[in-house]
Image (cartoon, rainbow, N blue to C red; front, top):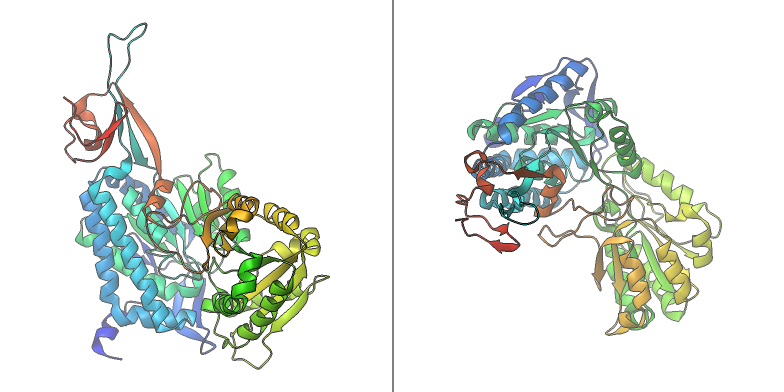
Length: 538
């Protein structure tokens, strides 16, 4: 191990970050697991105690009083410093990531790049400042029959936010991922409930955030990182009265449990959970006829990409019965067996995959058309494709559930009407895809409209596996794809999850925040008396 790597490697303590202090008061410990080598990793992590949880939340609550008043430029400096410190972890972070996930170096570096891009995007957003959507309606004292008051509105942060690390994205959806970056940008302190499968990766990234906070003068408690091997720490965090919002990426069961806990509090709080999705793909007849073979190859790659461990994995393929669909199923069964199996994230993940797969394929009327049979290494997933009649799919909601991994179900619909019925009865999804020839989609507009009503993002002649981080991306959808389909978990607009609109009425200009002052000292774009402008108010 070279000196550059070693200088960070010894930063793994297994402790919790309670603000800028390392702490390990508990007795419950655990280790992470290397699924490629099928052995435990060496570092021991200590689960946070009740006392440490309370300390972290109290620090966050106190930090919020300061953080909500600092400038967008200061928050931008903090976010950019986090990005710099993560990059400074260099190969240590990449090696730790791979040892805890079984994912290759290329995937680790790609996800790190996405994480850095997200941090810098939010830095740019809050530095410019117009994201607060300032709106001003000036007073008309002599309006008849009653005078009009001066009203000024903008977004303000909610308070301390709890972020749950995601198993399948240790960087982009975890410790310094999109939830954390957007919450910090909004002015909310963050407490991360680190995912037990990649606690070492989480601690390294947490150390980068703490170092960045110190360098940029952020208040102690702006960030904490708590270890947890089970659900207890997360439950206590969600129930803590000083926590004001929750971000979660994971299973329907986990997200719904947190949502229920939050709604049962004396003061209910929002839980922004991105949960399960089977991402239906509608392949129309003409496209099947002309491109069935190439589509089979494309979707074999999409189904097995990342061992099927993406929330946008195409788990459901829909078509109308005919020679084109039959040929597609045959070609897909051939192409998917050409793919080499790959490692899943953890023995628990592959255990759940095999269990859910067996539950699905045991259902009446289901037929397996491709099932990888050769021996594979431990924790490597065998890809499977199945098919079923449309009427059977409609009757059995078990077939509608996600099998997280390299698995997909092809539904053979009797006709266009049955296809539309099936789509309309699906649960909410993150994505939907339409595969069509030129002008073909217009002939099936009711199908397209039905799909639009069940998803957050609709794709034309592509694959769902891939989430571009940009302003126009919508990553969320009707329940259970997410708990609130009005918001996205990806892109700069995800910052709106952690704020609330707040109005000042007849408030002295000198006491208003800069965003709402007459002089517009930040030079941001504002809505003034119904017109969008950067002008001052004279």
